Each structure stands twice: as C-alpha cells, then as structure tokens.
Amino acid sequence: MYLATIFKVCKMLYQLFWFLATCCTFVVNTLWLCCNFASVGIPWLMLLLFLVCIGSKFVKLNSPADDVVLSMLSKSEKGKEASEALYWPVVHRGGAFDAPENSLAAINQCLAQRCQKILLDLSITSDGKAIILHKSTLEKANVTEPIHKLPFSFFESFNITEHHPLGQLFQKEKVLTFERLLKLLESSEVTVLLRASQTNSALLEIVRETATKCPIFTKRIIFCCASPTAIYQLRQQCPDLVCGLWMEKSCFTILPRYLNTSTILLSIVGAIYRNIIAPVIGVSLVFIHKDEFNAQISTLWKNVGVRPIVYTINSPNEKRYFQQVTKTLYLTDSLRSEPQLIFKSKRK
Image (tube, rainbow, N blue to C red; front, side, top):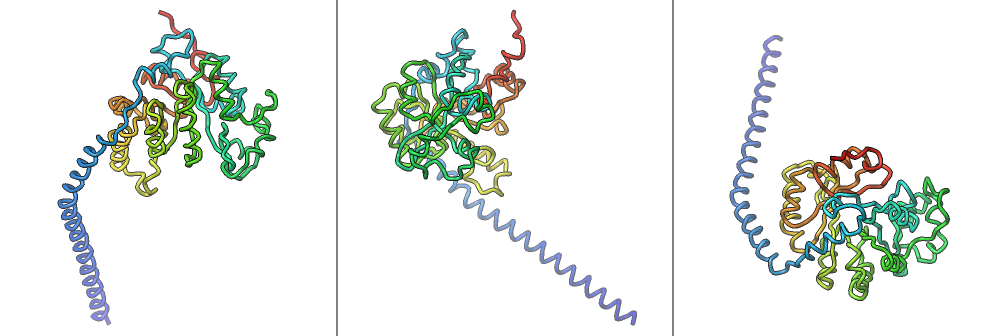
C-alpha cells in the first residue's frame, strides 16, 4: 500500500520534472530563434529606414516660412508683445465652456476678450456643403446620424445654441457655413485653425479650391487634421498653406491596443512622425495631448521646425505652467480660467 503510494508520488515528480524541463527548453529555443531573427532582421530594417530617409528627400514639401507662421500666431494679440503672444491660448471651438461651440457668438466673445486664435471644426454635409460644426453638438441634441450623412437642409433649421448648457444666454443661431466664415475673416484679424475631423475627397477638394482662389485663406487659416496623407495632398497643390498635424492621445491609433503600453514602440512611432512624416508633408504645427507632452518632446519637435500645441488645458495652474515654464501654445475650452484674469500679474 505504502510502496504503491510512494511509487505514484515519484512518478508524478518525475513527470513534473520533465514538464518543467520541456518548458525551459521551449523558452530557450524561442529566445534563440528570436535572436537569430533579430541578427538577420535588424540590419535589413536599418537599411530600409536609411532608404526611406533618402527617398523622403525627393518627395519632401517645403514648409511655409517661419515668419508667416509667427505672424499668424502672434499678430492678433493686441496690447502684448509678439513673443509673449506665442504662448497665449488657442480657443477650442470658440470656447465650448463659455458659449455654444463653433458658433458666431463664441467667435465674437473671443474677439471681445482680445483672444483671436480660434480652433473651429470643419465638416461636410451629404450634399457637399462645408459647415463649421462638430459631431458633439449633434450628440447633445440626440442626433445619432453623422454630419456627412445629413443634408444641408437639416442644418438650416438647426439651432446651435439650444442644447448648450448656457444656451439661454444667447440668441438663436444657425450653423455657421464655411462661406460665411471666410467673409468674417475679411473684416477681422482673427486667425482660425480649421480642424477637419473627417478628410474625405469632397472636403479636401473644397479646401483645395478655396485655398487656391481665396487669398484670405492662406493668410488667416491654418488647416489641421490627423491624416498626413490629406495634408500632403493639399500642400502639393497649395504650397503656401500652413498646416497642423493632430496627434491622437496615447496610442497613435495606428498601433493595436495591446502595443500601446510599450514605451519603446511609442518612442519609435513618435520618432517616425517627427523625423520622416512631419518634414515630408511640411507641417508647421503639431497638436499633442497633455498626457503625452513634456519638455523633451517639445524640444524634439522644435528641433525639426514644428511648433507644438498642447490640448486640452483648462486649469489656471496648468495654463500658467505652459505660459511661463514650457512657453508652449495650448488649446483651451474656456477663457474664464485664464491666469491673467484670476491671478494678479507681478510687476517688476
């Protein structure tokens, strides 16, 4: 009885030993195989990157002159030095916390506070009409259809202020059209950063045609989107167009979710964007989420001639940090939390 039990225990230990030995052998063989692939693949990968860098020189688009970009970012700040104005806010959708987003009322409110760098959303309807609107405005009105599937006739009767938390403080207003925005730019000094959340061929054609025919477009508008291909296509035909690249938070969405936590992979993707993609398409600005931003990232982008803009900054202390410490432009939803309105400035 006892001998049988001892025999079974010894047999189980023997099987466990060989199982662990097999697992160790498998791990060693896997590592050996990876090392072999790395020794063979890394030189070819380096050669490929070298060829890509050489090839990019032949398709590279020259970015607009830095003086042009500086004038668009700083000329409109009245009562302030140009260098100081470079670190003042870009108002997201005209100040979505202070007024109905992307509305004429929001734009006028920004102008009244002498903050004239405004980011607005550009969309297109199903019948090819360009409008200034973001899908979040429709979501507040319980409209689930995307903008590009709705006709322009739907927006002619849509009240943009009705579903905003502060809507009762503003008069009824229709959706702002792209044509009306261009007329507004003719009579004001505002600089509009126009962000296209969707870059289909119809929208790009409208932007291209307007940029080539309307001189005010390249002087007062900075086109922004998340698609390097769309920016490259536009700047091929409109070299004077100032563009900004919108970097999505955290994942550089081209990577699978399970790879997003890899710092090495994110660093590699960031280096490709900075050293290959950005110089090739000739962008002048890059939008970076605040969780992905630090002083080193800022320096790396500035070294390739691209100015970073951090989004979205609404805390007064955060704003003071970006204004006074990192000296970086930032995107904000509200002008009410600006440090100069809350904290007394120190005079020398």
